[in-house]
Image 1: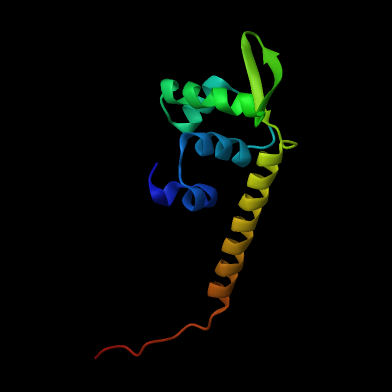
Image 2: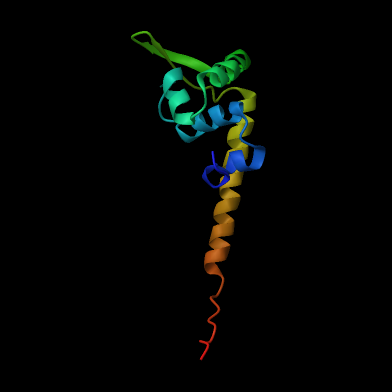
Amino acid sequence: MPKSDATLLLRYLGASPILRIIDFFLDNPLSDYSKNEVVRDVGMSRVTFFKFWKELEKSGAVRPTRKIGRATMFRLDRENEVVKQLVRLDTTLSRRAMEKAVEEYQKPMTVRPRAR
């Protein structure tokens, strides 16, 4: 993932596989997803994904929500203390970026005279 495409959270903490998976769920909070959907959307190898997915399940950061056919759907457990802290950090980073953008927008423009 190019640095310019990374979210604020990933630029701040680094794009480790676990953070990339968590970031996917933070960016898509309104639905639940199968492991295959997450693998495809995060863009990492299945081997890497499953290596780190086990840790996320063990820690309780992700939880199953329902089954659709043979697929189990998952979402971020927003009651998990670590997840709560990451959500808070993500919100803080977004707020700071917005404040900085507003400050930049409100700066007076300098007009340079044309060269002749």
